[in-house]
Length: 302
Image 1 (spheres, rainbow, N blue to C red):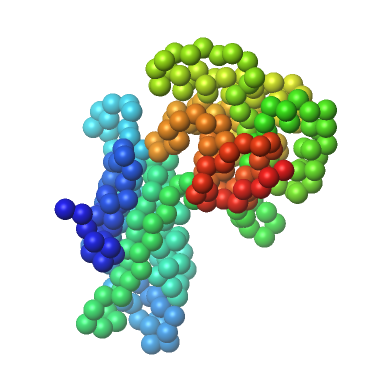
Image 2: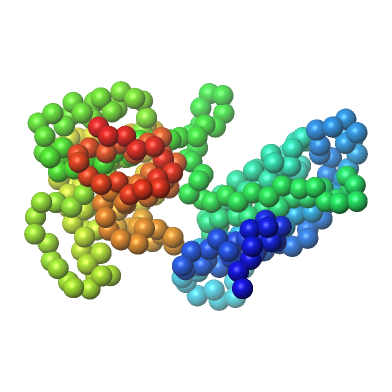
């Protein structure tokens, strides 16, 4: 039996997490009915008086690939959830539950194992009812942060898909100069090379062959311009983004390691997925190539 929209709207965050799970649901841990007292609220009558807040939190986590060995250090501990709540309540007095929910979500998603979090916070002492907010946030929605003079700022790069004619065009450096003039970190993505490649007749192995062929094309681009440094890991990409540098994405590692990553090997679809994952300003597409519908980032044609 499926839940109606109204039932789901008022359901526990655990039910909402289950209802919105993909074809391969993640593991989840939950904190139910955690009640603490805090001075919070925008109205004068709420100031200087602690009131009860009830937290219900569900965190979707990465699958554990190594043996657990019954070791708490190998999992996301429940204490991390309660500690995140306590730390944000202690940091400063807040007016809004929405602000508190966002900050708790950000702190939880900083944990390496956390992938998506559902948070419901309710005030219990306002009246004969509970007033509250609920948010859902995912790691993919958290942009990289860069230290600036006035604090931390989010980094939103350009993800740029280059087709093969563009890679080999004599004016490639000029095109990259024009994009670089926008002042944003650039993540370059490429498609399959115009060369024969093995046909395995088996989807999983063919996908790996195609990803490796894309990476060969990435190295071809690297040979065309010294700015085009090939990278494979999220750590390398984040490092380059914080420094405003240009890199070329070799997709195999990120795509194959992703719990909820793209299922195929369509190069433009991969570039779009990367743009969404990095909270990019836009996906810039060079060449007459099809772009999957339903993008959460703007798509520009160069």
